Length: 273
Image (cartoon, rainbow, N blue to C red):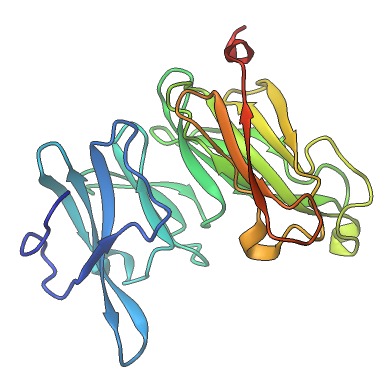
């Protein structure tokens, strides 16, 4: 797709990637990458900088040297659905957290103080949203990337001492204003009972959630998986098709075995008022 040899301000860089989790803009035109190398003696990855790229014009739009963020290696980098913002995310670093930069890196907006499970989505009017599982506030929260304004979608602490984990998919770009949320690893009594002894509406679910305050929330599927969901590699990470008509997810239905893949077909009328 592109050859970056000799085009970057970091001659020591040997790799260009998003660290697996980043994606392009919704139209596939704009990308944000990190330029890195691997130090074999210390067995560590080194970050040289981050940059933005226009695939159509085959043009590097902006660069930011790693010295500008203390040389901290991002957890991943992505670009907003509109292609207007590069969004790197630093784990276990509250100073850096998750930021949104314009394509020339002339400024930034702080979106979150951490790097949590999240995704980038389009709002009902084409706004860029960052949708994050914010354990500090206790909510799955939607942040307007352009303004920093936010609102809560779902509580992550549905009762005293009760909590769950979640993943987010915002890839229904053809249905702006919706995200898919997968919940798992619920517990009660402040973690002493896992799974939670009380089955609550949002627990062990694949849910379609409208990106607006007080928006609609639809249950798509029950995963049923709790203590035997499969650990890190068995976490439920449902994803949705661009037109919002297909949902894919993997689950072992709590039998302790290897997860299998499932597809759910959604009728288009659910998006209508």
